[in-house]
Length: 178
Image 1 (tube, rainbow, N blue to C red):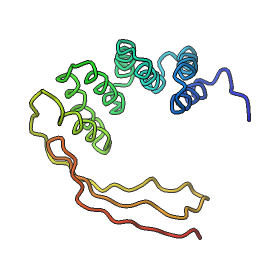
Image 2 (cartoon, one colour; image 1 turned 135 degrees about the vertical axis):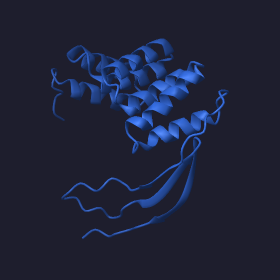
Image 3 (tube, helix red, strand yellow; image 1 turned 30 degrees about the vertical axis):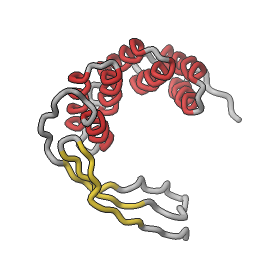
Image 4 (spheres, rainbow, N blue to C red; image 1 turned 90 degrees about the horizontal axis):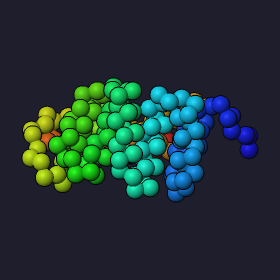
């Protein structure tokens, strides 16, 4: 295995994200802290570190990292959704729903924004405001050029209506490798 470049913030942030997936929260924190030492305005690393704070049970640091990520990249629907999750966990339902409502206006194709808002709104004590219906086809990411997949995913149409997700239908499409 090649050595990690000690001056590459992306490598450190990716290592931190990977460590977290493997349940190594403290190692993830160390790697993400290093990434942020190298590049303090790295919003992706801040969002990942906020997930570490969630696992370590520190909601204050989690929200502080997400507030900073949103300030650095206000056009990121991912940052707003993650911040909404942190606000919801802190019992700040109205602010959470505002973050979820903002995310799809930044990127109407960001399906996670609709899912986050829908799942949180259905359990929230805050009354829901009417939300317009949104419908779009979903397709899996295209395979990497030069790599032949043995199968592809399915096609689905999803409608989000007043914060609830309802699948309208799907079909699977399979192709064998050439």
